[in-house]
Image 1 (cartoon, protein in one colour):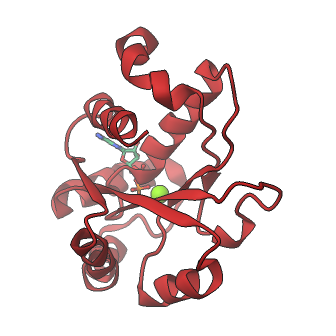
Image 2 (image 1 turned 30 degrees about the horizontal axis):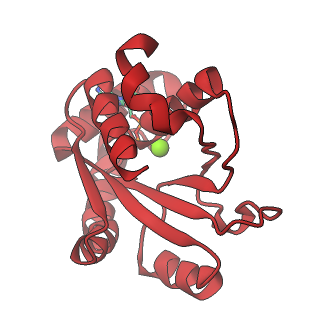
Amino acid sequence: MLSRYSRQLLQVRSLHFPLLTRRPLFLCPLSFMKPQVVFVLGGPGAGKGTQCTRIVEEMDQTMTANTQKNKFLIDGFPRNQDNLQGWNKTMDGKADVSFVLFFDCNNEICIERCLERGKSSGRTDDNRESLEKRIQTYLQSTKPIIDLYEEMGKVRKIDASKSVDEVFDEVVKIFDKEG
Ligand code: ADP
Ligand code: MG
């Protein structure tokens, strides 16, 4: 698997991607370099966590020269206007948002994936009723944030309905291109 991505991963390899889950205030406190942040967004079950883990794992396995520690992934943030305002207020001038990695996935596929995840995850909110509500919340609160970044030309959209490997292939292409 690694050899398949080895060419594209060349640039990703030398970077360090701590995975943060909705804890932007703990960003890289000791770094003298301005943090470069990638917001990872998409509906519940779109595969954000899966792909973030994969990015970080590939890093751990392949990293040789860990010279740049100023790159951060933030999974599932900002998920609403309140989050965004908090980010802008707290991080203005302290971090740059490189781009938004948007996992675009059909609602029904998202629900099915979460129902499957619910069988083993122990997440009590992975049931159909709760998932329908979470999809509505995503559409009403999070999608407009993605649209805002789209207007700024900062959204990198991926068809997340494909297999994990195919989606990751697209992720790698994007990081390869973005540097
Ligand atoms: P999110 O963090 O966006 O809510 P997860 O990464 O937790 O989504 O994925 C939800 C469920 O779907 C998990 O059980 C995961 O294994 C599965 N999954 C993730 N990506 C894919 C994919 N591309 N194809 C099929 N199943 C997937
Ligand atoms: Mg998740």
